[in-house]
Length: 378
Image (cartoon, rainbow, N blue to C red; front, top):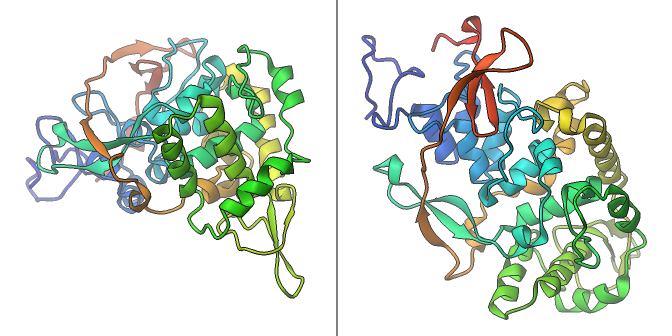
């Protein structure tokens, strides 16, 4: 039961469901992966604050980001006041837990601290929710390799902004940070090298669980003791197989870029969809124009383009990461639990942006104070 001093018994943003941690219902919904409930609370008539810190200085935004819970983060990211600018506030290397979220929504952070191949393919991260629900301060979460939708997302983000990564996708070679010309000149995605993909197409025919098969393949590579380069080659080829295959039916008709399932039979190779290339160009342009001076998140930057909602969600790669429940695809022995909930240091500071820009600095995350008239009544 919530702890509240409200006389009328209404649940508000000041109603603590976890009194010791000062967590309200929005904190819990973000923590427990309830994006529909989160959407209800942050929009009128409630308009609860997605940046409200609990006693450990963790916000609903932070909960979603550190678990790479993009479905929940999507409901919060457009309404958040949080800002990040490496030239103003001390940069912290992105946690492995939130690597994909930061890469998608905070490219300015990745420009200052690009992603290594090892961080993507061999490091553990914390995802999902499990364990006891009674005490939120000792909640438990799955710890495993990066799940399939996140692997697919990062590979697609590589197409648009290879400068956020410090490795060559084709060779695995480490690229010195800041060598943008090398990234753009060497990472071309058509024509693809189909000689490696032919054998993969035969062995992987009939797959219907993409992109979860990428995760399962990375687990198999770990169990077999594959090198980092071998793992990259296998995961990359599996991804390209799903993204660049055109199945030819018995009647001669084509199913272009059928990324979900691979049917046995005649198969041709095709470039990425035009819509995917357009998305990559828009992202590349926005990131290159704003670069390290960018303060707001990428979703808010896209919102300023005043485009239809379907194109907006396309530019945020929702078709790739919004693939439903991942837990059925976790392999046995790779869902060990570890506690989460370390208190974060925070200080109230004045930003250099202007005399009225005062807010909370939590590491490299600056959250301006909320304007009083923007606070909802509930």
